[in-house]
Amino acid sequence: MKISKICCIGAGYVGGPTMAVIALKCPNIKVSVVDVNPERINAWNDKNLDNLPIFEPGLKEIISKTRNKNLFFSTKIDVAINDSQIIFMAVNTPTKTYGEGKGMAADLTFVESCARQIANASKSDKIVVEKSTLPVRTAEKIKEVLSENNKKVNFEVISNPEFLAEGTAIQDLFKSDRVLIGGDSTKSGEKAVNLLVEIYKKWIPEDKILRTNVWSSELSKLASNAMLAQRISSINSLSALCEKTGANIEEVSLAIGMDTRIGSKFLKASVGFGGSCFKKDILNLVYLSRHYGLNEVGEYWLQVLKINDFQKKYFVKKIINGLNGTVNKKKISLLGWAFKKNTNDSRESPSIEVSDQLIEEGAEVHVYDPMVSRERILSDMKFLWESKGMIESKINKKLNQLKIHTEPINAILDSYAVTILTEWDEFKTYDWEALSEKMIKPIRIFDGPNVLKRKNFSVPIFFTGN
Image (cartoon, rainbow, N blue to C red):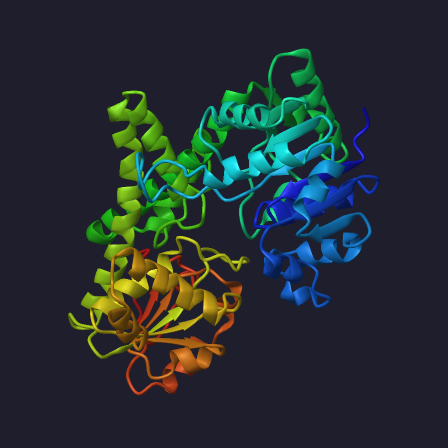
């Protein structure tokens, strides 16, 4: 069988960029990206490529070459399912907020609903690909849902987890460290895996395409994210110790990274990690460990998240101490809302918790981010406060302490302190000396990800990474 038509259910951070690259590298394959959200689909189809729902360097250039040629965005999910030979599932798998596993286990509601829709819409055999990050043995549940709802069609379920880093997703797709494909060891399972391998071989060297069983593939995704998050929490815990002892965290990171057994990646001290994956996947790993009676293993991974929470609180404490013990009624500038540069994603961004703590202390927080919208920032804060059980009147009162700017100068002028929470290159270009001269009071800079690299300012300056 030659693959000529594929579809992806879910037009988010995984589905959109992944399918765009597949369409670019496989011009003979029709690629359909479908989603239940018409606003998101309309944004993908917008003639103005600057209005795409996801910002990734290089993405709009790919969309301009492939959209409406062999890449299509639509809300007609059933049509795309029935028309395709391979169906990618890239739906959301948030952490459960109810029932058993609340706060830790993955919520598979969308996965189950997606599988049921695939079953009901399919009239011919399909290869179903898990693209979302899923707990171990989810493929088994997907198979059950598919077979229960459609006994006339043969479904092969394989696991193909994404290993994309937001901000570099396109480059990650072009030059993947590895592509992991897990399938059953049956003839039909191996055939399904090989068909997917043939697609990736269009641009990925075959020695970087790893074939495993389904369960190994699923667990590898969780384990990879947990290991990366562990490195960040480890270096962040050492950054706090450096401040107490007079050591320099940049020098310590360099020394550690030059050990070939360790390497230099993910050893940059910051306010803490964010994004949609690390926290969610670690909590899932903790839940799985406890579920199988491995409580000590679960507790080990839970400490990674505790250090991440500590780092954000420690950052706020440093700001307060640097401003004579109080931020009440003081303007604090917050530069950067995205959880990292080169993305408009703010899920689990440290900026959210830092803003919440500063507002709770009475500060007036002024935010600027070059890519994250005002609506998203307000939504992030409302979601946090609602999750804490706050009533609407109290939320509105807190929102009065939050000011969002489209120009950085308006966020910075007359502040008691400037905090840098996202490592946008733009912040490196500011003339901080000139800005300080326009201030009523001396400028204090709290540089979470150490964007400014400890330049020699004549104005008072504080760095959390020192």
